[in-house]
Length: 636
Image (tube, rainbow, N blue to C red; front, side, top):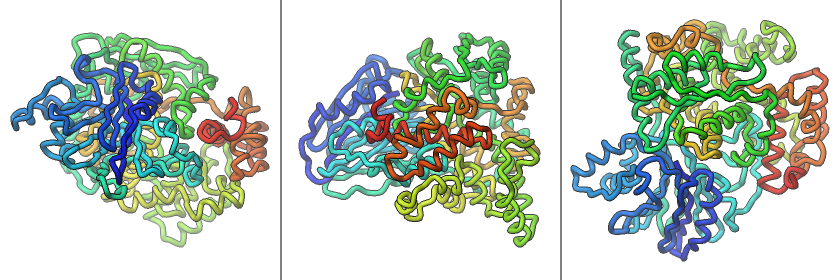
C-alpha cells in the first residue's frame, strides 16, 4: 500500500522539478512511511511513498524496466501476481524482483491496457511509456484505491492518491465547487464524479486514462462493469457451495503478505465470515481486533468475542467513549473533502488498534452492496412490489398524502410513515435516490441563499442515482438499486472511509468480499437468493450456517453507531450553533444564517432531530476552513 503522485506535460516536454514531485509525495507520507522515491524524464515526473508489504527488499518505486522505457508508480496489491508472472515468463519476460509492481510493467508491455483484465486486485497506478510518449493511469474495478487529477494552467496534468497531494502544487487554484457541496449535503460524502475543489477530478472506478503528448486531456475509458442482467438458475444448494468456494478463494488470495496480517472483527456477518475463512487457511491464530463502546446499546463486542472464541483468534478489544468526538479534526485532515459518515470515528479507532500489531488487516466491506444486505434494499423491494400492484392514480394520491404527512422523528415507528408514503408515489429510481440520501432536497433548499440556488444551475444530487439506475444492465428494481450503490455509494462512502482511516495510520486494509469474481457471481443471483422475506443477504447467510452461529447470522444489523444527535444537545451544542455565525459556511454566502440557527435551536430543544444534518454542517465548515481558508476553522 502506498501513495503516488506525479506530473505530465501534455503539449511540450518541459522539465519537471524533482523537488516539486517530492513535495507532492511528502504530503502522502502517512500512506507510505517505509520509503520514498522520485523519477523524472522529459516532461514527466513520478513520485512514490512506500508502505512495504511484498518483497520488502526489492519492491522500491518508482520502478522501471531494465531498458528504462517503462516506469511505474503503484498503490495497492495485485493478488494474483504470481500467476500472471508465470504466464509472462512463459512469454519470455525476465523479472528482476519478487514484487507485484513489476508484473504491471511487463503486463503493460505484453498486453497494453488489456493487462488490467488479468489483474485481480485493488490498485491505482501510473505508468509512463517512453516509446509511446504516453502516461497511462488506471484504477481498479470497484474503486478500492483512489486517484485524483487536475489540468493546470501551464499545460500539465497532476495526479495523486489523495487531494492533499495536489493541493501543495502552487498552480492548483483553490476555489470551491458548490455543486459538490450540494452532492455532499444530499449524500453525506462527495461522490467520485465530483470534487469540492473546482477543476479536480477523480478517475472513476473501473476506468483508465491515457495522456499523450501533443493531445488534449481525454475522457476516461471504462474497462470493467458489473452486469445484473443475467440469472443463475441452479439450486440453492449448488449456489451455496459455489459461494463458499468463492469466499474461501477471495480470503486466501488476500492473505499473501511479507508482514504481520490480521482482521477487523465487529461480530457482524461479514467480518465474521472473513475471520472464519482466514482461520481455516491459517496455521497460526488469526490476529483480530474490535472496538467497543462504553454505552451498552452501541456495543457489539459480545458478538465479536463469540466469533473470536469459536475460531481461537488472538483477539484484542479497545473500549472507547461514546462521545469520542475529539477525532473531528483528525478526520478532517485525513479526508480532505467533507465526509459525514459518523462511523468514520470508530473505523479510525479500530484501524489505530489493528496497526499496533499488524500492517495488513482484512475487512468485511462489500457484502451488503453485493448481496443486498442493507435495510433500504428490503424496503425498496417491498415498496416496488406495492407500487407495481397499484394503479398510477392511486400511487399519486398516496405520494401526496406522504408530502403532507408530518415528519414525526419522536413517534413510534409505525407513525413515521412519511418517507414510505412518498416513495410509493415516486418512480423506483426517485424513491431509492431519496432513500439512500442523508438530507432531502427540501431541507437543502431551505438552507440555500438565492446565490446558492443560482450557482447550482439546475444541478440536483439525486439525479446521478436516477441516471445510474435507469442505465443499469439489470432485470428488476433491486438490481438497479444495487448497481447504483456499487457505482456511487461504495466508492464514494464505504471505500473512501476505509482507505482514508486505514492509511491515516499507515495500515493496509484489504476487502476480500469485493473480489470481482465474487461480485460477478452475486450479480447473477435471482432476487430470492439475495432477499427473502425480511432477510437480506439470504444466500450468503445460508452458505455460512456451517461456520457461524445463528445469533451472529440472523441478528439485526447494527454497524458502527455514534450518538451524534446526543452530542449536539450536549458537548457539541455550541459547535452546532456556531456554524450559523462567523463560520466558513456563513462566509461563502451560500447558506442562510437564519436557517442554520433555527436548525441548531430546534435540535437542541428537542423539537426535531437534526443530528445528522448538524454533523454534516460541522464537517463541511471544517473542510471549507482547511481547504479555502474560510471562517473560524481556518484559524483553528
